[in-house]
Image (cartoon, rainbow, N blue to C red; front, side):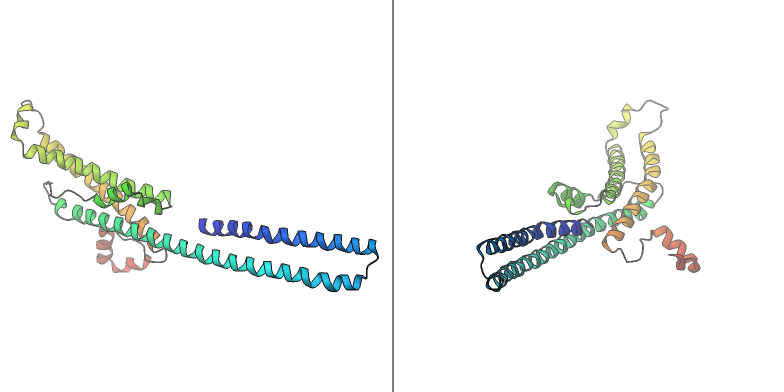
Length: 240
């Protein structure tokens, strides 16, 4: 939509010079005709000499204008295609990274009791794209918000995992826990068990939006839970 608006605005700007030339030519013809009448000149000769010249000038300018317009249209189409391709590439990088994270959360991190899994959930691609300004290709604020929320949840999970990892690998920390107080490890584990479903839901939400943006006419995103439910109930798959 934005590209179409830019194209129409450019077309209007390009049409203004031709319109000005046509108006000037019309005024010149009117002035010449009035002068010819005043001087008593042969109007047949006037029209014979003037009209072909004016028409030729207007036609020449029109052809040149259309040539410029076609060239600009081609260039605009190339720019739009390049921007669309770049947007798709950026979204695919983010999609792959989020897909890795959600697979991790549904894989080793789904085991109980909840343990810390190394390496932590990946966010390198998202941070690199953000720092380099590549996110400018994603011109949908709602999509950016969904992706950002997914990474916010991933950061929350990673923060809890790092804290649990530190407690598990630094026995000196235990001495700061008063007798009878809840163990920090248990509190962090409970927090992770509570956080994981929220992180998974946020990632699934972002992946659904990304898939729609990358392939608007393709099938909708289906989470692992929904896929498993459909596998158990094949008759429901026709609803998607």
